[in-house]
Image (tube, rainbow, N blue to C red; front, side, top):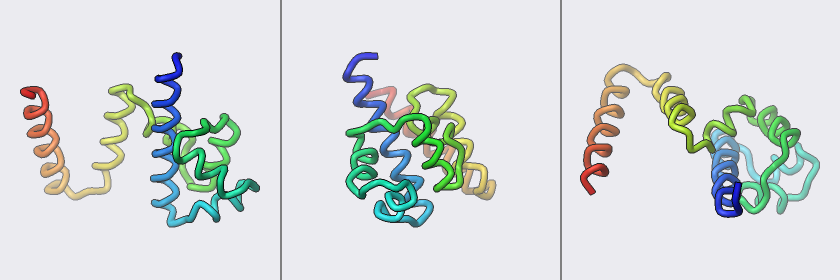
Amino acid sequence: MNKTEQKRLAGSIGKAIAKQRVRSKMTQEEVAERLGVGNEAVSRIERGRVIPNILRLIELAEIFNCEAAELLGQASFHVDDQSNRIKQLLTPLNPEDRTLIIDTIEALTKRLQKG
């Protein structure tokens, strides 16, 4: 993996962690306290400056009450992982809202393929 790919991966993992933190209604300070690190450490992870190691990912997943694989899956550029993420997002919606989302994705896909 080259440096560009590493930076992209770090950024994606950081965004996934930030999303889970916000979903959990926690501040960076609260996460830092639970991890036993400074606020800046959490900020660096979320900004993609640092890639957390496996143990840290597991700790973060426990804090956010999710699977570590979910944090990695949200950061993945693989179609299967992205499809699973969309499935997770659609599952709690009612059928009409799911149809609206699917129609929107279909329209965007067609438009982007033209451009």
